[in-house]
Image (tube, rainbow over all chains, first blue to last red; front, top):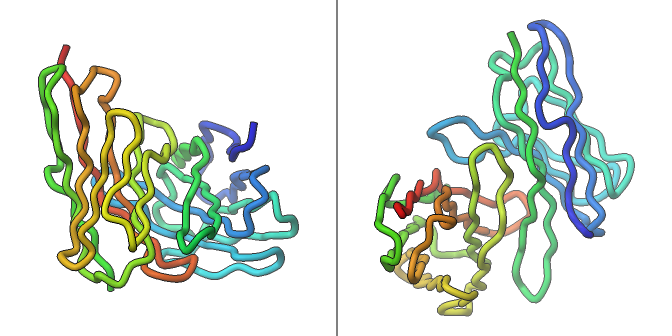
Length: 114
Length: 112
């Protein structure tokens, strides 16, 4: 089955530690995204990547870093510089076909930092 | 800057009722609009995608319409079922891979 996998589903870390969230897709999509979702707020874009070895900051990139060494993989590192890292993180990929962009989402990772 | 608003924020209906969820956006220069469903603690599942040149799309009991000139889209759910209970989000693609704006969503509860 084609899709996006994120691991782990739940992640707990102590304040001051860096943590890496995994995102893998087998949809052969060029573009991949990381979003953050907080209660009462819409999805906010952290980083996106249109092609391998290239990525761009989104609206809330401070305290986060990414890499895109393979088309299938787009890991997100939440660093100790992120002031409020506890949130639900969603990875997505998209394709552009027939004049339309369509996004597909993974199941998400809930990160709790104490 | 594109802004997307979804009304109502929450909705509770009895099973079997037809209902309409609303999505409005401020910039009508869009490529397409996508409706998603999100269950608690889960990722987003795509329901319908409407291109800017289209007026509506249908999938089963779902029908989404788009009026680009007025900046509005509606998601119509016919004969609602308890399994439809979820949060419904709309996303507007305004151009470029990064130009996706999401609404906060409408939380739907269908009561048996």
